[in-house]
Image 1 (cartoon, rainbow, N blue to C red):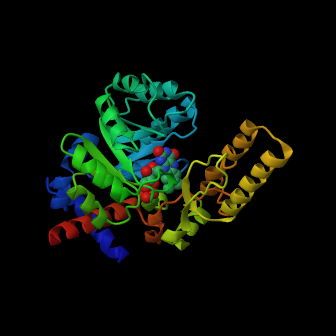
Image 2 (cartoon, rainbow, N blue to C red):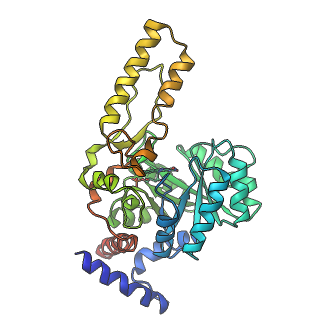
Image 3 (tube, rainbow, N blue to C red):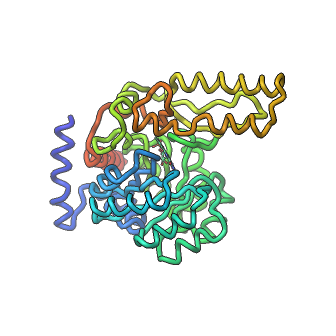
Length: 355
Ligand SMILES: Cc1cc2nc3c(=O)[nH]c(=O)nc-3n(C[C@H](O)[C@H](O)[C@H](O)COP(=O)(O)O)c2cc1C
């Protein structure tokens, strides 16, 4: 099976050199997305903190997809080095994902500008005043997320060039609504006039075909690429993914209404259980020991600090955060990025061919 995909991958560059595509129906539906991204396929690898660094990002872009560096909590100096190193590994376009609440957001934007990054993804909240303008000042495209249709329209009106809608099947921080419902709400309203990429729970090309037919110009996947051969994730992190089924990727649970928990989808492990115990312990301390509410909330907020790094880099699969989406059940082995992309495109093409 793996051999067949590799044969297929080898064939693709020859077709491309001849100005042909191996996936005409899918490529036609992706045309607006690929024109926008400057990539061969409108398949973004969503930024994954600690995972989406130079190696994976360049591999995705070199394979015709669109890699995105996860800036996460990086300093401007670290981002500067990461962009430069990624440029050293690919001459294809890639983007940078910035978290809107980063205290040095504007310095990070400045770094992107210095490197003439073509696409900046603003994630984690509403872009602060002036951020979209600062990105546009160096002619980069701005990609935004929106959890509701009203906010999506507002962000697209105020400078967002493209939108990612991401359902709760996704790995990492999630909203409350599924990808299929978001797609039905957003695409009929927005697809004709705007560029919309769909993310969350996509593991196979048949799903890509479906969203493209609904009007999406492309898709964003994270979980499916997290354990690619080129991903630097620890072997123990990858092994946990290969073992897991969809139902193992659970959203974090809030135990007490006074102690807000931002929902994150990750593989359940000892850390998940300990987090529930911690919430009960803090709630009890609130009731019985009279600790301040702010202190209690901070204890919950800081519980997972550094946990993704511990899982991805150190391989601590019991205490770390194994962020993963429900499509994790479709991740069975370590495959080269080019094979994954070829599989997705071929599956989409076969599905469209059957219509
Ligand atoms: C391990 C992991 C880390 C992630 N980190 C980030 C992040 O730092 N910033 C972000 O915007 N999204 C992050 N995401 C979400 C991905 O960019 C992507 O949108 C998501 O994985 C797509 O859904 P899927 O997991 O079902 O494919 C992360 C996802 C995973 C699995």
